[in-house]
Image (cartoon, rainbow, N blue to C red; front, side):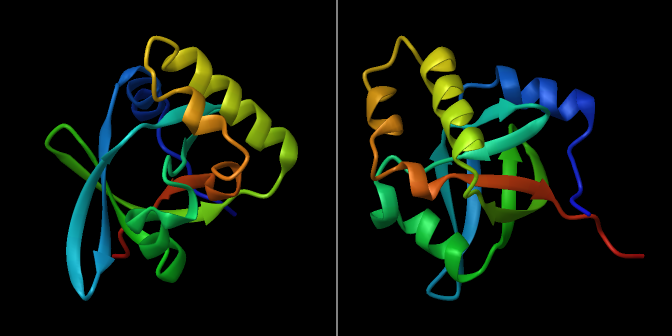
Length: 126
């Protein structure tokens, strides 16, 4: 069963321009500023550098990391997305949300599509 962000968090993620993701790279935490979109109440990210993106490679090697929204940190797990319908809807949302940016079209290039990840919050264990 996947965990989900709260409705309030999802609304904020849908509206915010950029977030930071923190991954482990060479044994050290590293933050990268990226775009995020929301489709059907789930948060998605994608690497504009396709599989060459360092943060993407780090999430693939170890799916646990963190999402920073402003000064708040959320532990997350990055889950690869393979469903073509969801990938297409994520692409549509990137083009809608970031339409004014010259970086929007590269986000939907064929080589970026396999880098689509769903971010799920990781609940702290008691």
